[in-house]
Image 1 (cartoon, protein in one colour):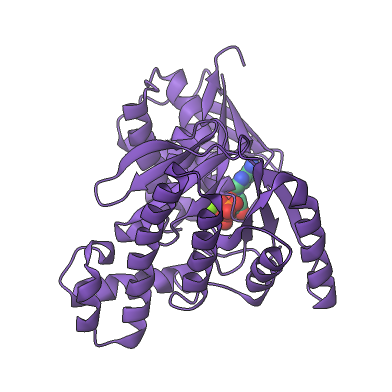
Image 2 (image 1 turned 180 degrees about the horizontal axis):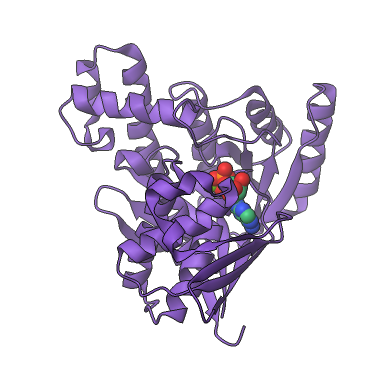
Length: 369
Ligand code: ADP
Ligand code: MG
């Protein structure tokens, strides 16, 4: 049983997921595959092509308080098995073999791709359905694995995009009620691609001291000050009631970012790609200013892409390092890529790596694999 789950880029809507706002990611062509086989015993054997040593353990090792002795990367896998057992999946011993086409830790969500490929492969082994409604529950299971077990507090966007992506479509997620809709994103037909530039600075999303955790805490504090469950549920008028200036900026980003997702939908419906590009650049300005989630390298990639003729560009996937995206005409993509390379060389910054992507299929299973 082999399952394939793609990474994602977020076209727009960053730091909105855990705040109850809107986001618009799409699945990319590169994916992680997991091959799962049942064993005759209660042992677990987990191997990834990205790491030298396989990990072997026991079903009994899946308790939350036993995870400290498990290597970091393995926890993304055992976390899914832990959450699955909590949900009552009848798990026996398993051999799991993982391989990935995604760069690890660069903002294309290799972590969600790994979790989702494990969930789909193992879920299929134990006869879990894969209809769209069931995929919503699987996404939540994987989100719990990453948040509660791995300890990297993610909002759930990555898992939903990986599980519910569709070619030539983006996945609109409203985190106020976790409703999902696939919306046309016909980049190819419009002669456009998304250029992803990995700045090579790993974004550390895990850990209590990370920028991500700090922003989450600031957003939670802003929501608490307004007596709301999440800051994305506030109205723009409410912001003036926030005395704390930092909290007010963070909240302003969350609300303006959700509004930009809505504006993007309108521009997409009108086929107005120039406006889509402008909105992407406005998102970056907000993430850089109000949300303070950018870095010098991310800013350099974004500014250079726009100067070199991209319709718009922004950091994607949370910031504090990681990748940027630029919306660019297919025939200009190489020139934009080169301009970024030159700018990085001139600034004496480590050379970035690039990929071009189009909206692609969500996770699938190959039953003969
Ligand atoms: P991103 O999701 O943007 O790639 P994260 O920091 O969220 O970055 O997740 C990266 C981590 O996920 C890796 O450091 C590793 O622990 C784990 N991981 C992802 N893909 C794989 C894989 N194919 N094999 C083993 N571990 C993986
Ligand atoms: Mg991740």
